[in-house]
Image 1 (cartoon, helix red, strand yellow):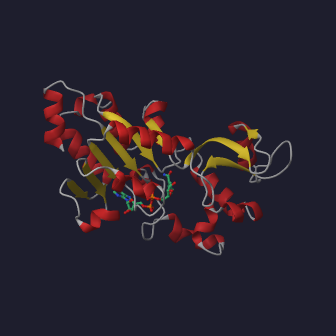
Image 2 (image 1 turned 90 degrees about the vertical axis):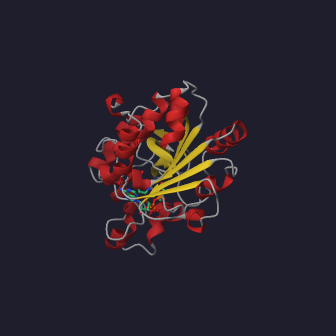
Length: 264
Ligand code: NAD
């Protein structure tokens, strides 16, 4: 990967098209727990909420009847409390070097944008906390109003129909934004040279299908604590697996690429 990028940069040819497909593991060092890590993951710690099953916290039918568990979580995860990680800045450096085609993220924490990626480079496959809407009449509730409910430990309600309001993050049972499918089709047909998959267990669909949809000519790099998805089968010649901590690997790559001075 380093050699490939160095070659492109030496030739001053910003034609390499790099796509990131990332998940909760790139934000754990910011203090946001992922889902599935043993002991520290949200699923491990949801038992205190007395849920029928851990995924219920992000289940739209469950939320419509019992929004309290999600709102407890919302209070903990609400944006503004966390800062981007080294890995987010690695992605930003790819953008600064004109190598980033797109960053597809499963994360709802807004840290890619906070690190400085422009809107057209980020696809939040599972939405984000940036806007909030009523689950019935779809009336928008501003962040300020939403937050004012949370600080009073109240469930945010629609000013029009009094139904529950939730952030525009995609729950199980809800459709992904059109933008996710449209941009991916566009990027696939335009060509992807390198697909960097990081900090994800590749267990949430349809996001998990992205790496497998790239052609065999695409270099696929997994940066994660453990192997996942079809990286486990060593099925492709152009697969690279870097196992370890995402930030440590980001620091190593930044150093090897000689990009240290470009970090703000
Ligand atoms: P996941 O919890 O299923 O998997 C996270 C993966 O990252 C695991 O394989 C874990 O070993 C790895 N990991 C954790 N910390 C790491 C680190 N420091 N370095 C390297 N690898 C690390 O998360 P997922 O695959 O993203 O899917 C879960 C869903 O969780 C997504 O839909 C997402 O919307 C949601 N989620 C988002 C956030 C967030 O916005 N930060 C947090 C929790 C969950």
